[in-house]
Structure formats: structure tokens, C-alpha cells
Length: 259
Image (cartoon, rainbow, N blue to C red; front, side, top):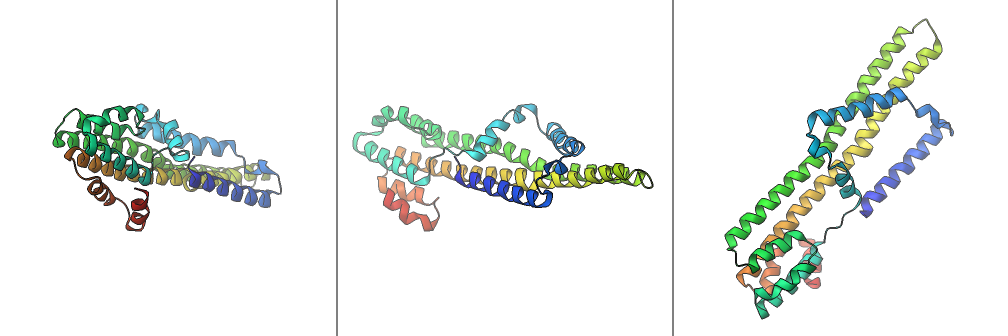
């Protein structure tokens, strides 16, 4: 579970509950507008279908899981693991790492080590792993793009519904007060739905996915340098120093102690 995502969701829901309860005094039906839901949520869904291929949209459950759950290894665990592998490779030879492959949780690291064990040249290993990094980066862009589209067009559809509600209200001038009130409610609730969808849901989720993607790229670049260092037969301390280049200075003392 991504604790920061969970904390943010809980704080947001709590604030919305308190504000809504204070404004409605428990009469939550006043915030419900079927027309507003159709306009904002239906319109936003239509936008993403028009803007993105269906194959990409099938990945939506995975994007949501990535927002709420993060199972990746941290820098401390990666450096400790590669340091251990480096010591074994330096002592027994790189072929001694083959039994370790089945125990590795990171497929990227396992792929790099497998090529090194098979005797691939450093150039081939680097080229292959960099292509994998690029492919991963493109996949992650699709997830952020989805939420960016919702963030961009959700409020726009809310504005469309607002204008429709205002036109309906003006058309009822001099007529039924109830009809005017319904049209005005559509205008206001649609704006609220669009604003909430963009600022409380799509925006934060897209930003978190973008941040996770950047972290994953840096982590894989660090692993790539570690694999190349192991392949070259470097001293484990040299391997660690190369990987430390990808870690913020404030964290290096902690990582050195862990390694």
C-alpha cells in the first residue's frame, strides 16, 4: 500500500464530508444531479476514448493499482542486493550468480544479470536494457496521459453543463420557480463535479504516476550501471559508488551504512 496515497485520499474524503455535512445539514441529496453526472463523467469518458487507443485504456486498473500500491524495491534494498551479488561474483565468478536469478524479484535486474552470465558484451547489455527502459517510459506516459486528459477536459464538460443549466434557467424566467431552481442546480453541481474530478482525483493521480515513473527510470539506470560494473568485474565498493551517483546526497550516508 502506498501510504501517502492512502493518507491523501482519507484526508480529502474527510474534508469533503465535513464541508458537505456543514453545508447540507445531512441532506446529501442536494448535491446530486443526474444531468451533471452524465455531462461531466460521461463527457470525460468520451474524451479519453477519442484521444487514446482502446489497448491503452485496458490498462486503467493497473494505473489505479500503481497509484494505491507500490511494490518496488527501494534504493537501499537494491544497493544491498547488488553489493552482495558483486561480492559473490568477485569471489566465485559471475557464473556463480546463475542460481540467484530465480530469487530476484526485479525482472529488469534478472534480465541484465542473465545476459551478463551468458557472456553478452557490455554494449549489447546496455543497448538491450536501455531499450527496455525506453519501452517502460512510454507505457508510463500513457497512464499519466489518461489522467491529464480527465484533468483537462473534466472541468470543460462541467462548464458545458453549467452553460446549459444557465440557458435553461433563463428560458424559465417568469415561469416556474421550481424549474428555474432545477436548472440552476444543474449549473452549480456540474461545475462542482468537474472541479472535484480534476483537482481531487485526476490531477493528483496523474502527478503521482509521473513521479513514480521518474523514480523507476532512475532506479533502472542505477541497476544498469550496477550490472555493467558486475560484468566488468569491478570491486563491489566501486559498484556501489557508481550506483550512489543516482541517489540524492542527503541519502548517501544512509545507503552506504546499509550497503
